[in-house]
Image (cartoon, rainbow, N blue to C red; front, side):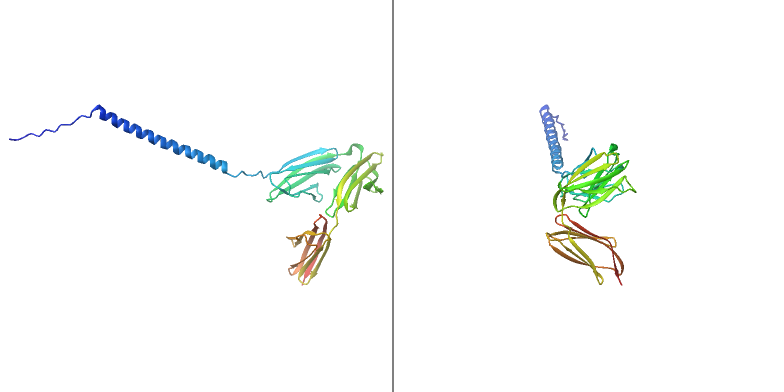
Length: 306
């Protein structure tokens, strides 16, 4: 007797379907929590990295230049220590402003007579250079114009100009006796005098009188320093540099055929240095600076090696 086997498909109950739906719902919620957690971690990590990222210092100094009658007041601030500040008017030689590697530097300088362009150069501790140019006009309004400059040789250059003409100037150190300089009949509009600065802290007072008897006065506080002794000679194929100061030497700069060298003296009182020279003509310039800032220079030297 043949038996007929019958198979029966069981239908899932509503309870089983609910369990399946609940399982997938829980799985989706867990996955969502994981993804949100990873995203939050990434955001926090990114925020911390941004917070810990080193701040980049401003490489451009802030410069403020104000005119006060016949003077210019220069104020410089920087996030980095300022290594050197130099300026010059028109095509004249550079003047140096002491910085002592500070973050801020201030200096008042004389404004020359006539139409002038001020060129200012700032170099920070990393060697970044910033340049500024500004134009000024000064006619004196009928009075003489006095400009006082400190030279690299630690002297004072007294430069006085007037549109109509000058009679004379006179100057005194520390309220002592006056020295008088008469105007040159060949050029009454200009008196240009170079004077020595006494040692120590001094006050220079200058008076200028023009042909209309109009008077201008100006004072300058300045410190006179000794200049180091400098001897430069040739010994065969060597350049010999000897510098000496009774307090201490600071640094010697020298240039041979355009190649620049620097030798720190480590506060020694006497320093001697020898440098090889090439065959033929050697052009030499040497600058010796002592600890007080006194400078002695040799320019346009020539050494010939056979």
